[in-house]
Image 1: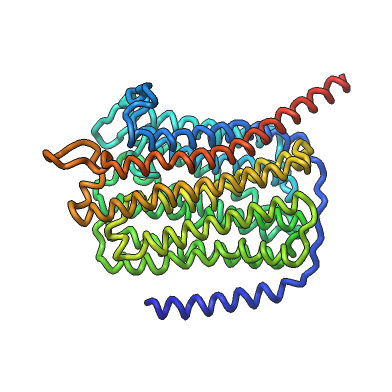
Image 2: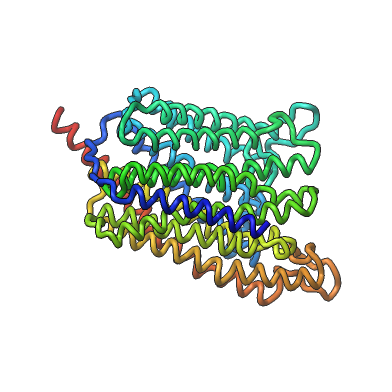
Length: 521
C-alpha cells in the first residue's frame, strides 16, 4: 500500500507541477473593486458578533484546561452552571460556528463583486438566520447538558433534536444542523449561478464545496428524531461528518476564498488559481472521505481500516502545500508590493505551514501511524493535532476575512496591516507553544502510563485504587498543564491585537457613516 501510495503521489504531484508551470507566466492584473454598496455594508454588522464569539471560544478552551488542575477558577466555582462536558461541547461547537458564520458574512459581502445581486431583505435574512441558528445551537447544547432540556424516551426525542446529540464534535441539535445546511445550500446556489466573469470558475468550485459541506451537515443530523441505536453506525456517521467539515470541504472552501483574494489583489493568474482550487477540491474530497477509515477500527470495523485510512488521509496534506509553495514563489517573483498584498501572502504562508504541520507532522505523521494511533487515540496528542491544524488552517484565514472586508471599506488603513501581521505571528506561535510545551508532552506521558496501567488510567481524575495517584494529579502532568499558559497567553495576545484592531476599525466605519448621514441631512 505504501508503494502504491508513493507511485500515486508522484504521478499526481508531477501532473500538478506541470500544470502550475504551464500557467505560471499568465498575465497578472489587479482587479479594481468599487466601494461596497449599501447591501454589502449590511454584512459588516456581523463582524463584531463573530469576533466576540471567537474570543469566548478561546476563553472556554483556557477554562477547560484549568479544570484539569483545579475544580475552581481561582476560587470561583462555575461547575454548577458550566460543567466540564458542557464547556467542552460549547468550545468546539463555537469554533465551528464563528468560522462558518464568518464565511456566510464574507459571502454576502463578496457575492455582489462576483455579479450576484442581492437585495437588502436577502442579505439581512441570510445573516440573521445564520446568527440566530448559531445562538440557538449553543443554547440548546448548554441547556441540554444542564438537563433543563430533559432526556426522554420514545421514538421522537426532543433533546436530540433541539438540545445536543452528546457526541464529540457533532453534538449540535439535529434541527439546527438541518437549518444550517439549508442556509449553506442556498449560499452554494448563489455562488454557482454567478454570471460569466474571470472569477466564475473559482466561484463555482466554491459553490460546490459549500454544497458538499452542507451535505456533510445533513449526514450529521441523521437520523434526526433519535440517536442511532448501533454504536458502529453512529461512529461512522459522526466521523464522516467531521471529515466533511475539516478534511473534505472546508479546505476547498478556504483555498477557494484565498485564491479569489489573490486574483483580486493581482497576485495570481486566473487560470493558475483555478487549477490550484480544482486540484485542491478533488484531492480534499477523495482523501478526506476515504481517510475517514482510520477511525473505523474504533467503531468495531476490521483492523485493516486502521492502515487504509491512515495512509490515504495523509494525501490531503498535498493540498495544504499548495498555498505554501505558491505564496513563497510569488514572493520570490517580486510581485508583492503593497501592504495589502504582503498581508494576504504572509497570512497564507502562516496558515499553510501551520495546517501542514498540524495535519502532517502531528496528525498523519504521529497520531495516525497505526501502531501509535492504537495508544494515542483520544489522548492529549489528539489535542496537539487539533490545536495546530484547526486554528491555523481555518481560524487564521477566517480572521483575515474580517480585515479584508473592513479594508475594502477603507476602515482599515495600510498602516494597520503591519499590526495584523504581528498579531497573526503571535497567534500562530501561541498554538505551536500549546502543542509543543503541553499537549504533545502530555500525550506521550499518557502513552507511557497507558502501557503500564491501561487506557482507563490516563483519563483518571480521582483515586480509583489505594496508593495509585490519578493521572491528572501526577506532579508532572500538573506542571505541563500550567505551562500551557505560555501558549494560551501568546495566542490570546495575537488574537487581541487583530480583534481589537478590527473592532476599532468597525467603530470608525460606523462613526464615518453617521457623520455622512448627518451632513446629508
